[in-house]
Image (cartoon, rainbow, N blue to C red; front, top):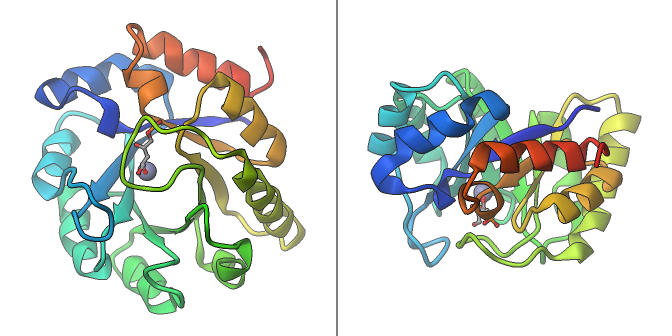
Length: 220
Ligand code: DX5
Ligand code: ZN
């Protein structure tokens, strides 16, 4: 399965976001947008005005990772701002059925995120509702953290379930992704690779995205 590369703009230069996105646009498959509310996680990042401003300068698909206490209330303004897909933490909505329905009603893609400390069993019954299953490989809240290899077992479980049940969900790994950890996550069954620091922290973000893809695709 070909890898999809999803740069996280959390690690971009917020004073030059459009330039940073333009530098990688031809080398990536989607944009990962980390929305943090300073409540669900102890950090604030960005919201609707920034997403709308970016929507005006790129056609990339926006995967909006909602690290917020009240995600459903944001679906409509996010859609208006230009979001394509929203992901919600299973820890926030242990039964995400109505969250999924709310996203679908707005024609937003829907995904679920599972934190490092949360077992895959929490999310397994709801994978059929998802376009995307996100396995966090760091504790959410900050970029630049170290990859937690123990979560790879959850990637394997997610891949097994998606394939055996014939579901269409992509499996994304988020946090501490480098060429080395992308290789590990790919072997475990991930096909979408979020990277903030490894891409925007590099002097040549486009080349860094290419290196990640090569690693994830097993070409390197
Ligand atoms: C963490 C965010 C991640 C983060 C990844 O809360 O969900 O998407 O931006 O950043 P790196 O690649 O630096 O770990
Ligand atoms: Zn994220």
